[in-house]
Length: 143
Image 1 (cartoon, rainbow, N blue to C red):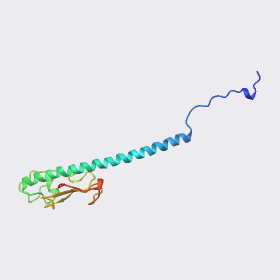
Image 2: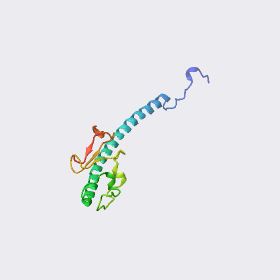
Image 3: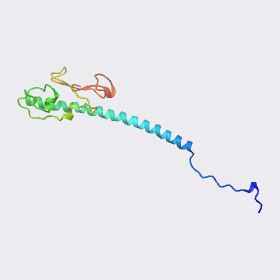
């Protein structure tokens, strides 16, 4: 049998991905993952802001309990944890030390007497600074 160049059978090439195709897919996966992480991060911050708002309400309840027992709100938030010298009927602790910080790790702002009532508690949001909007917005117990 005479094998001429026209009669040579070629094996089919194995199917698969080239290096360029694999790199393109990896880059696309990275872009999608980056977008997902960014969106999840925003939702976490929104959740923490909502938790901070709820914590203001709980802390206001703790201060009300202190005031009922002692006749007036505490001079400072730490008085909810340790008995101050002027508390004649202290029944505490009224709060835990962790309750005095917001979900972002900043201390709640407290003023007694307050501008809006017997006491003011202010949650300063993610940035821990007065003012702002979104997750950086302030929230007070009078709102």
